Structures are given as structure tokens and as C-alpha cells.
Image 1 (cartoon, helix red, strand yellow):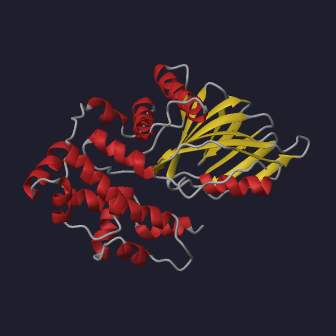
Image 2 (cartoon, one colour):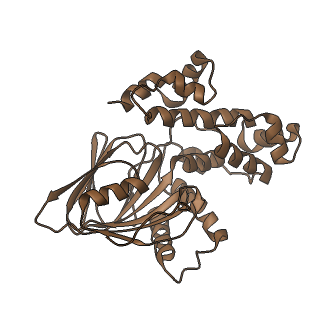
Length: 337
């Protein structure tokens, strides 16, 4: 294996650009590495006729990562639910079979697949397959989707799986992914500027939202988004980073540098909500995430709800069901299967 490690600064949420190459002929070593940059998964080599020879590049940029994969051999990968991220995939050579819930897709060059976090998946690919994968944190894409909509999400964001690169929108998204991969892995890249890196995650996520059909596409494409003032975006970013801490409207007003009245007016005009309603929405999303991936078998709905500040369990349960279409206990039960 090459001398590949992920330094402490190379964590999701930071703008880091480094692209060493991971190489290995050990399936267990490969599985452990991929688990660190994506999620835990089952990994099997299906056919010993072909030598297992992995080559992976990985670039972390804020809350997205751009990756290239080649396993050499026939492999199958079973991560179950991705839970906290969306996955974009482009097959460059070879093919891949994707089982997405009850549906099966056959992926090939010229096709982009968009895989959501709430549906169980399993993938298999033959020897010689090469592909690009982009990981986008769920919180990032939901945040940017809300900015386009001007309000919170009343149901989980779901994309159609397939997008042909030969279409205009597919060409835009596929071309951007390829360009970003080439630029971020090049030693001569000008993308090493933090100012440029800070815009990549927003550019890529927005291009995805505008390119691929989702259950919010009609509303996104029919709306003419207003450019919100900086204090609104500043408060949103603070809430996203500190939702697990006590936050008052006075805290947010001081952070924004405007009066409480102006803060409410800004959120009403540009987000069609209030600052504290947005905070509650973010905390509800985090509760949903924690219920989907409980820390241990003894974790309870009450424990997770209280951790995120929901003291009135009856009201919490009703609001949770409206947002996610199931009760908190149902989410937790499904996660333990």
C-alpha cells in the first residue's frame, strides 16, 4: 500500500485539498479505508480469476469529496443505507449493477447515477471498472435546497436515479464533476486557493439540484430566488454548526448585527420562516439522522429527542411524522433491522 493517511485537518467540513493515491492488494485494508471516507459497508471479491488491485484518489473539499475508484477484480459492495450523504457516480470504464431499494439499474459510461441516503443499496461491478464518485453531505444539500426554495423541507429530498450525460443538464453536471476531479488532482491546479475551494461545494450542489429531477424540482425551477442579505446566511451557517448548543434569538440577533425585528423580517422575506423555526427544523433533521444510525442497541427515541431539545414528546412525534412520513419509533426500528 502507498503511504496514504487522512490527516487531522482532512475532516469533512474543512476546505482541504490533498490527493495522495491509495493503492492496495488487500481487500480488508481497502474496505477499512473506504469505510473511513464514505461509510461502513460489506465488501466482497466475487471472482479470484482477476487480481485484486485497488487504486483510489480522494479529495475532501468542505462537505463534499471527489473520488476515483478502480478495484481490478469483480467486487460487490453493500453499505445498506448511506444515511448522512448523497452519492453521485459516473462509470468511466466497465459497468456496474445498482440495486436501489426494489429497483435495479445497469450503469455504464455516459450515465450519472444519483443515490439518496434513505434507500438501501447494493452495488457490483466487473473487473476493469473505473468510476468517479462524489460524496455530498446531506446537511449541505438540504441547506442549499432550502435556500433555493425559500423555506424548509416538508419531506425528504429524493432524486431520480439516472441522468444521461448526453442530455443538456447531464452534460452540465457530468462535465463539472470531471473538471473538478481533474483540477483538484492536478499538481498544477489553481484550485488550491481557499477562496476558490469555498465556492466548489456550493457550485456542485446547486448544479445537481438544477440538473437532476427531484421531488422539489418543479418548485425550484418555478421560483425566482432572491439574493438574501449576508446576515441571513450568517445566521443559517451558525445554526448549522451549533444546533447542538443552547441558542436564543438574542444570540442570533447579536451574531447578525441587526435588531431582532430586522432579523425576523429578513428570514420572513427571504426564507419564509423565522430564525427559531429554522433552528427547530435543523434540530429535527439531526434527530432524524441520529434515529437512522443509533449509537447502540439501548438508544431510545426519548433520549435522542431530549438530546436535541425536544422536551414535549407528543408534539415532537407529531411534527416528526409530518416531516418524514413515519413515527420516530418506526425510524429507529428500521435502523435496527
